[in-house]
Image (cartoon, rainbow, N blue to C red):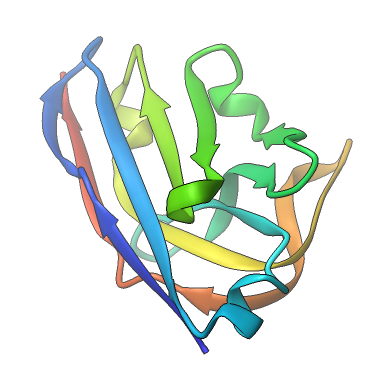
Length: 131
């Protein structure tokens, strides 16, 4: 099993920035099988949707159209940690943000990025943007 520990959420005014972190832990045989990590977000009453994903071994990144140019996902494989730098935040970014780890990052022209086989979710961290 893989456990995900998130940090970095909070409240910020519109135009501000936040940085989320997600550290993966667990037996190495499970960690090595994870090749996609990233972030999803969910607003009450709506489905959880992909925000930003990163291919663990190739470094390719995937973003939702709504965050392109404002959010940057990065990773430190030595620490099994991914980061989400969020700039130019606006009220529509207010949501619970969940870290995810699994197999197979992908995206299509019709929708946000997703993971083919998700293995684990973090507990979530709230991001609130006030105008």
